Length: 349
Ligand code: TXA
Ligand code: MG
Image (cartoon, rainbow, N blue to C red; front, side, top):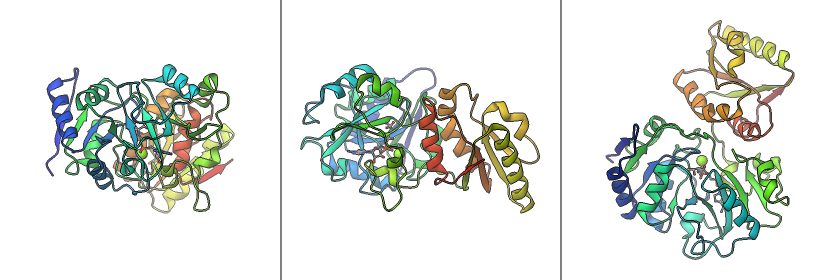
């Protein structure tokens, strides 16, 4: 398949947006930017179009898609909207928050993967909003990565994963949030935080103090049935095995350097992921060091996390050693993704 590729530099070109919308209307698939990560979109109401998303990504059929809207009137898609869910939308939309609601029959089973609920989000990225409006339908979109890989946060990574597999790829720079949206399930009571994100648990509690969060729910081995089906798959994983080293600061560095030396003696190429404050410490002795930014700036770490993981693939490292980050605020979401990338391979020192 020939993929049309357009990357907006400084301004959005409406002609290309219109072309993307035409493709969506005709039942095709278009990768597009959002403020969280890039999405792979199709008409959420067209079951044949939605099937193409699963094919292009190699996504398991039992993993539901969220739909992206440009209009806050959800009555066509959701049976009922609890008052607190509405308050959350009023406060955080457009933005990186997805709400799970009981769906109407208008949403095909292909989109919801057989569930009677649907995830809905209004993105704040301008290109995304213009594309949804021009398409005239909600756009179903998972992250635009090949299933299992870290989500793409820029045009280049989308092209890497999807060139030749989709009708069009639209880019407009790097996603400013860098982590997928926070997901809250309002089809159950009490409502449940299913996936932490840039909008933190504390942010949510300011609106609805009943929301519960059980981190173990996102962990999910075969014995557990996670609420968000996507949480059960190995996720966000770079090619090389990743180990998180966490605990007392001085000890973490010592352990990472000792492990690195060990691996190097076995002839392995070692990658280290840590805040830029530790650059001098690790940027030596054949270590491929990637900094995600300052540990004082968790938004910066979040923004750079997936691109950092994907850069290790380019560097052909054999193993990755990652410093654990503080699990405060956005740090909860950062560590949620990093733990999944490690397959919960964590050393505490
Ligand atoms: O920020 C985001 O949410 C990005 C951008 C493109 O909007 N999208 C995204 O989609 O991350 P995806 O499919 O990669 O992740 C959505 C997650 C999956 O874990 C899926 O299982 C879960 O949401 N999910 C979707 N619909 C659901 C539902 N009805 N009930 C429970 N979980 C659901
Ligand atoms: Mg995804």
